[in-house]
Image 1 (cartoon, rainbow, N blue to C red):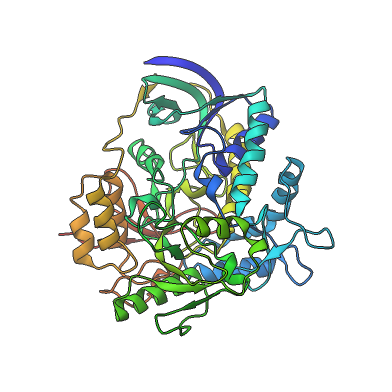
Image 2 (spheres, rainbow, N blue to C red):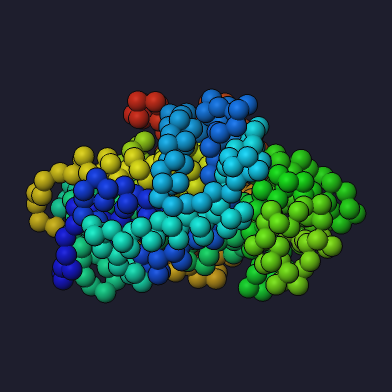
Length: 498
């Protein structure tokens, strides 16, 4: 096992969460190896059109933000995680400003606040309109590249973790090299590109989840997959391109083939996505239309430019849209400091599952989550670093790495907006380990809640409020409750799978 070096901390993933965690640790004096699968500032976060949800307005407060977050989570959100997010959002906004992020301002010089679905107040902060992800990752990437304590490894992929039998001790790279560390933070992104129709970059396939699970970390809530209502529906390379929800906050409306509005455009995403899905099922159409003609193009220059490049002039034409897999609320199960069930392994961003989002992510909470919990994980990892103990070995990780087209089609058909036992059980034989884990989680939750909709269990069960699916390698999946003290005092046995 070739060793390329040692660091206090290894951060895997150079999106918003990973960059911020690396900078936080370096600012605390730790040496950090930052692993990026692409060149810096080319992560999935780079393409994020949404902003940061943070209560700044005179008529807003962290309490109102908390209320909206809990409501959107459909009774499955972890209240303690939501409280942390809403209470610490202002702090990270100030820190990002000091790191060089230039926020959009109103005529009074204050941060301009947008409105998105599920929010009762204007509280979405953007940088460059729909270019928020690009602005933030560029600013943070520049800081990371300048830091003498951060060693950046670009175009590098992690295929396994190192373990001494009790703790995660570093990473193993696909080239055969290893980096030893006293702690590892996974910020490897989500898994929405596992589905055939997606708004995500092609590489967003949840590899970090598979690697962590193989090493002994629990995964949680993989059945909770959010489908964004307004992804471009036109085929080709641009199919699935996100049309940000903020556009609906500025007056865009959804209409069917008859030109009729059929849904409250600013309802939570699970409601809007299902309404579109049902309208398409009823009519046989492949898309509905987003009417953006009343929206000022100057508010969203990148979106208007991208649509024009697709041959659609949103100032004069309707935009064809349909739901696409967008965000997996589940991930590596963590506490409120990003610590997974495997000591020494932390996770942040879409890779992690703190329980914050419950069964339906509130728009723009995810980018705020990257920074709030990225900071917490970085500081906690430095405090929790154990001394070295037994011999370190590479934990084998099952393949294949990439999902086949057949896997992506099967997930779309059988673990999409509507699921049932028969379809989910068909996924248990899929060649890809994550497809099987998603199916196990979805089979375990025998109810409909938020983004998880079972046609064979259409009701929401009151006795499952506050419960989360949990998967440990080699163990039967279970539905467990996480209480505010971070313990799991109760569980419900999983159903028998044929």
